Image 1 (cartoon, rainbow, N blue to C red):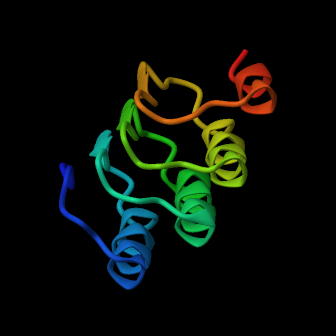
Image 2 (cartoon, one colour; image 1 turned 45 degrees about the vertical axis):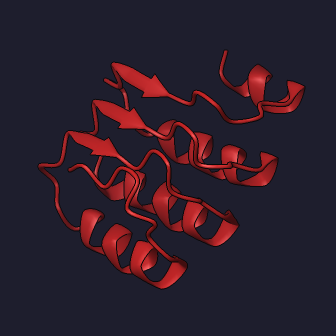
Length: 101
């Protein structure tokens, strides 16, 4: 599912991610170049609890703040076979970097 650079607002993002959490067959998710705030990150994290088949996730240039990063990484802990994670062009602080290990 490619939603790159769609300028998705919070309401649309929450709706889309709610649908993703019910779609067990989505393996590729590109959300790059959309602003992901804490609320959207929380829903994204929850979606990873029900859809554990994500293999490729692109969150580059999403202006992720530290708290949003942490929420997303907590959700990704449920995915055993993640093969590609793109976090490029986001500011990653030391606390987030240690959670990536």
